[in-house]
Image (tube, rainbow, N blue to C red; front, side):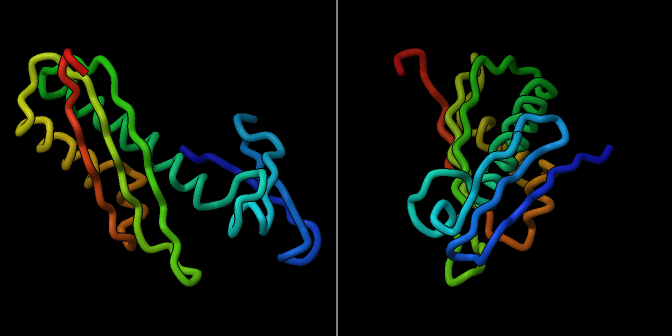
Length: 141
């Protein structure tokens, strides 16, 4: 399997801008700029796209792991934060909240750790420190 995305940039790094697009058209001329990357400007940036990729991949892996372990995931929400310091992407932090009937927290943590280590994006980001917080929702949440 191969997937493609492309980027176009016009102008200098600070005054210019560009867009990213994906083969599937899920991203279609999504704008990005210096301001959207290093300030709070409108548009996306590579780190945000990395975070989306890691959150999506991990969440699917966790669902697969839970199903394989005999549990029925009702809902899994993952937020990923990519940190960049001094021009270097240093960490990927996963925050997971899940509702799964019948699972004990110890087993959930075990399955979540396995998903963190084994989802394809985690493996691709192996050079980063990947951290995680996983919370199991109760029926009262």
